[in-house]
Image (cartoon, rainbow, N blue to C red):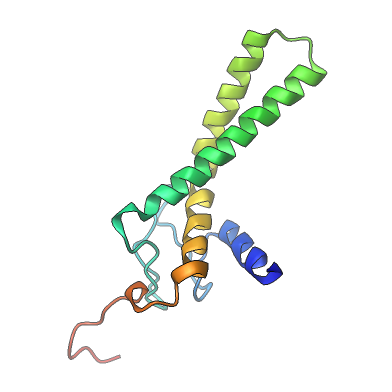
Length: 129
């Protein structure tokens, strides 16, 4: 149980979940299709990226609620200002933490089904390894 939790926290490193060698990112928002060292595919199915979106929206909701709670508790601002501030925090959270949310989703997929053969890149026949 604790081992799985610590492996999931490895998603914040943005490294390959299989070999932990290279970064999964091409740039801040674009992921590579697979690891060039161990040939592990990050997202096999077409809909696999939706898990990262769900994680990202969850982070956004939690950060928006957290900002709203802090402002409501410790400031004399009105409800409209608190609403706009919490919406701004949620949008900023989506923009800043989306690569980490997608990486956490890749780690979730790796822990649940990463041992299967479809996650390995197929070598062309006759290709020396």
